[in-house]
Length: 360
Image (cartoon, rainbow, N blue to C red; front, side):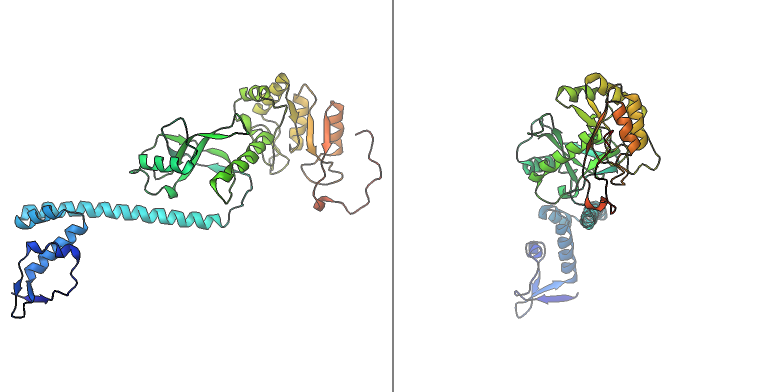
């Protein structure tokens, strides 16, 4: 039988020191402990089982009652625990890779630029309360605790809030949610679709000032009504007196003066919107609208329309500015137009007329 010697100064892991009750090493003439290969095997078993989370009592029961059946049972449990740890480590790796990708992507993001983004359907869980505490971080931690088995690392998920914007001077969250594809159980989904997006760098409490910019953008682009025609009257009752049909890009109402390669005009839904705006007394604003949308709106609207912030294309050749023919058509239908001075890059080098035509 082979022996190995360890002095009392040898650094044996703490878990093994606690397990020496299971072995009885012999002493040599110098009083050094002598361990047999069987002792070393038992120590290795104890170390491995402790690392997997087995209690000292269960390990002792196993070592004192070792049979083939008992050993197989223990090994199956070891295998189950190992597979679980592998899954946890894999999830941790996935989360780290996700965070790395997000950080790299952040380096390329257009900060504070409002843009439309097509997003897929997203799984979500929400905090089960109707009132959100002022401390947002507290709410997120509470949500994370509620779904701790579902949410491995909260930093790897998108957090969001359902907002009450009825009073735009005092916007507040009505509930908080977490969205992520790796959620195993979820309560609801955010539908796939086109969303308004803005990235900014800074504290969460700075979000409100950017949110107000986005809401204004929605108003100018007709996004506020969504696809619900009744929202037109609802906004009119809340004081909205005009709405821009589109902005820098096509929407459900009409084609824009920019990024409109198809040459789209006013859609069927857009025609309904314009007629509803006429009915409730809301002005139709065609600034940013494409040329076809402009003439479609003129034809559809039973009341004069406006171009609240456009320039003359004769002075600045830009697709979102109005041609002379558009200006004359607008005036002929009783509409009005407000000139806006564009950037220096639009200035023309030739001398401008000293007097503008009085007919426009």
